[in-house]
Structures are given as C-alpha cells and as structure tokens.
Amino acid sequence: MKVLVDALVLVSVASTLAFAPRVLVRCPGSARATGRALSPLVFLALVTGVVYVNQVLFTVYVMRVHGGDPSFIAQYLPAGWFDLASADHMVQRLAEGFPVPTLLAPSVLRVQAFLELPFVLLAFATVVRWFDSDLYRRITRSFLLPLASVSYTAVFCLVEWDLRNPYTVDDLVVRAVSAVFTPLFIRRLAARDTGTCRTPASVPGLLVFIGSLGALGVLVLVVYDTALLYNLGRLDRRLPLALAAAGALLVLRRVAARLSEPSTPGLTLSFVRHALQYWLALFFVPALAVRYGVVFGTPQLAAGAGLLTAATACVLAARDSSAEDRGGRGALGAGRRRPFVLLLAGRLGCTVLAGACAAAAAAWLTPKAYYEVTLLSGAAAFLVTAVVVCGLVDAWADARAQGASG
Image (tube, rainbow, N blue to C red; front, side):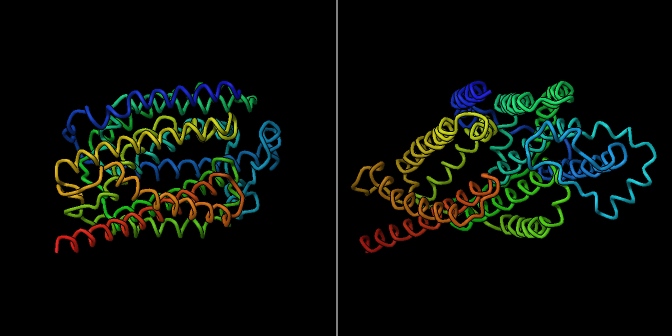
C-alpha cells in the first residue's frame, strides 16, 4: 500500500509538471457559453446535501435492520467512524415510519463512493473559479481534469482496498463510474460558464480570496468529520462552526464582487498573484495523492511533492513578473539599478520569514484533531501574513521611489 501511494504521488506530480504550465500558456480562448451558467459552488452544495441525506438514510437502515448497531461495518474500518444520530427524535420518527428499510442497503458506503469524487473536484473547481474564472475554464477544458479524476479515483481505490470490507468490490465499480461521469459533468458545467471573476493583485483582494478559501476549508472539514466518516451524531456540535463559516463565506464573496484590480499592482503582490495562479494549476492533479500520502504513504515524500509544486509555481511567477517589469508595468519602472531577481528575493525574504513564524504559531495554537485542521490554520496564517507584509513592502518601496524622484 505504501509503495503504491508513493508511486501515485510521484506520477501525479510528474504529470502535472508536464501539463499544467501549458494550460496557462497555450490554452485556446474561452468557449462561447451555451446556456445559463451556474457556479460549481451551487453543485457542491447540492452534492453536500445529498451526502447528508444519505447519512440520515444510513442511520435509519442501521436502526431498523441492524438494531442500531453499526458494528457489522465498523469492524472493518478505523476508530472514529459511525457516531450515529440515533438519539435524534426526528431521525427516530423517520426510522419508525420508513416502510421498507432493507431498500436503504446501498446507503452503506456505496452512495458515498460515488459522491466523494464530485465533492472534492467541485470544491477545487470552486476555489479556482473564485481566483480566476478564465483559469477555471482553462483547467476544465484541458487534460488536467481527467488526470485529476484518475488520480483522485486511484487514491480512493487504494484506500478502499487497504480497508477491505464486504462492500469493497461494489465501491470500486461505483468509483470507476464516478471517475467517468464527474469530469464530463464539470467540463460541461464550465463550458456554460460566463463568469468574469478575477482576484485583484492587491492586499484586500488577496485577503478576501484567502478568507474565502479558509471558510470553504472549514465547511469541507465539517462535512468530512460529520458525514464522510458517518458521524452524523456530531453535527449538532459542529453546526455553530459551520454556520459561522457559511456566513463569513457569504460576506466575503459579496465583498469580492465589489473589488477592482489596482491600476499599478506592486511588484511583490503581483508575484504573489502569479504564484497562486500557477500553484492552483500545478496542485490540481496531485492534491489528493499528497493529502493521503501523509497518512498512507511516506510523509516526507508527500511533503516534498507539495513543496515542489509550490517552488515550481514561484519560479514561473518570477518569470512572469520579470517579463512585466521589462515591459514597464512593474513597480520598479525603467530606472531600477539592482537586478530584478535580487530585488524580488530581498522583498520576499522577510515575507516568507514572517509568514513562517505566523504559520508555526497558528499550528501550535490549533487543537490537535485531524492534521488537516492544523494544516488549514497554518496555511491561512502564512498566506494572510505574507500578503500583508507584501503590501507593506510594496508601499514602502513606492514611497522610497517617489521620494527619490522628488
């Protein structure tokens, strides 16, 4: 298992390094919309709703067919699963009145096996569309989408086989069907998209995007904890957090719709935006392999793969920022005296140091539950601190340039 997961991490990273840069450079123009467009966030919400409906039906099935004891399946899976909502009065009433509970047998793993892939792909597609709707359309029209579908499905199937149970063969077949259907659906969805969303290369714009990403990450983790692990009984304890995240997300997206691109973005913030753009494209395919590689593979290899995509994104971003600077659109203008790379490295040095300190503090303060929670808080702290410091560095550099010019 460990060898297979590590191999999948390597193959996923190699494939994304081969194809992702071409998506941003050589992709054809935007396709003409063929009808009314809907955001992937809408379908992500629908898939999430179906996941929770399945959880309720699964609870009814266990209560009526197995006397409320989930051990028939729990014995095959790790601890931390199947905290059912059997004590909920509404669930009890539904269970008492359900006519043929044996028909709910597919709610045991198989329905979820189909829904997990659209859930993760739609979540990633939502984030990409928030950042740049044109990038979203490019990725979904490229080879990256089927590659991601295959990579994610391979990860799910490896984990499924490692946790073998009486439903494993059925789940593998269902996941294969989902791997074919889901990318076709998302590609068609993106082909109808007419959005013009683009995160500005400014401190407010990038902070709103990071806040949106963090709020969605909280919601995804709540779904993971309460639904994907069949822990519907925990939902009442997680509901205040989920409602707060949903409210924050609604406010942030409204704010994002009112932000505009600065006329002359600073050099460092422009680099950050380019880096995020490339990283979203580069991390799309290996995202799930890296995530499960930490647990089921070699953690050092998974971390190295993630850092490689980030480093590649930074190199490509530096190239684009340098091209903009040579074209006279950067913050330096034509009269700079120091080499571009040295100047950018100097500005980013204090940014990375400040971001790393903030990430370490956030990770230390975060309660230890799932490692994804610690990772989310650390990444959010790093990005927020880095963006703020970049804005301050650019403002300071602009003030110095104007003082020298005066």
